[in-house]
Image (cartoon, rainbow, N blue to C red; front, top):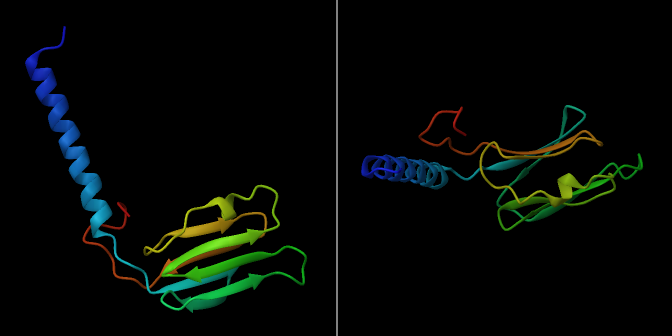
Length: 122
């Protein structure tokens, strides 16, 4: 049988968890640049505040299209089989990334301010 103290404890835990999620969500800072790496090497760095599109690997047959629009970055096209990188949500916070493993392409947001919480929580 559930007692009154059990309900109070469960309510307190839910409130603390909700407060932690809200704190983390609202303390994230916007990043300043997009760093695109191919096979571990930096391919191009683009500012996050200017709209641009970048096509990678057309000559090799494996291609990815990275688009910066409205302060967010997406991978709009790729000819890999799984399409996980294309279906990934748009990124715009510091240290967020989109990865295409078959083509060894990584798109990461860098250079933004760090939040007030430590790196492990990010």
